[in-house]
Figure 1 (spheres, protein in one colour):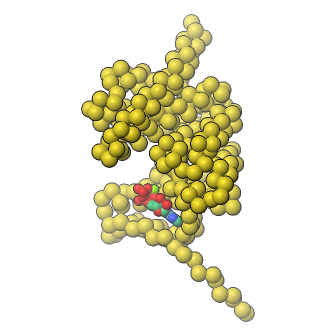
Figure 2: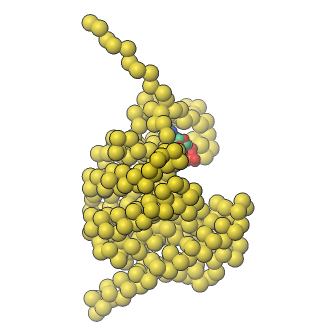
Figure 3: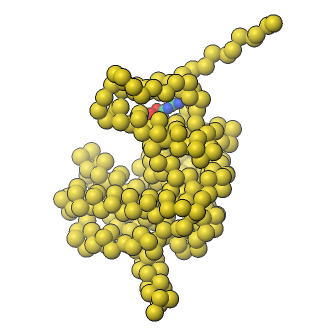
Length: 284
Ligand SMILES: Nc1ncnc2c1ncn2[C@@H]1O[C@H](COP(=O)(O)OP(=O)(O)OP(=O)(O)O)[C@@H](O)[C@H]1O
Ligand SMILES: [Mg+2]
């Protein structure tokens, strides 16, 4: 029998002995399990080894080459990348769609994430005030939560996403990979355009926002206005994180991101207030 030689496979090794690094790899390994359980194992690179015992935690996986970020910098028509991304993302949403509580869980986390950024660094720096913190406190995540969830996480960003033959590859999941997909799209679009200023990101942002509102909204059973509010909420969170990240490096942009975060939060909050009133009227 003749067995042809296998082409060499480049691999990436992630390894850590302890602390935050180890916790992140443990999280990745839980994320891989969650992804496989959701029936979308094809978003993972070929995982050659997962190890989490004894001295260290490690993952050995296929090298996926250029990330979305690297590809966008080199591509002749980078706008096309965003179109490929939404096609692949739509399939992921449909395959993982489920009636459960994961969207609500994620929105509660989004709310507490924004609150901690506002109450901590952003308030100390004077980028937000008590009124803004109150606005976050007042958000009724029950009124905002879709009943359906699908593939979704907040750290869906261009350097962690790879496009391969029109599929998304996502090698760095945290332990939870279900939630509200619109939050992921808002994070990706916002980081690509406002944080990285990637080629094609202006148009790419518009493509992703309209996809989130007009296509993902109906898939997860919500109106366009509702989907738009969730996109704004995702942006409010992403901008608050981006603002905190820049506070000591680029004060002006940090301030600008803080201001933009509030603008998006106000939009989300307006929809939420109307929704809450609607519910009260229906109950009375
Ligand atoms: N399988 C892979 N193939 C190619 N590149 C990869 C692969 N896995 C990770 N990378 C690249 O290495 C970078 C860092 O890896 P990863 O995100 O998994 O580690 P991390 O410790 O979570 O880092 P960070 O905190 O920056 O997200 C990624 O942003 C990605 O661009
Ligand atoms: Mg990462």
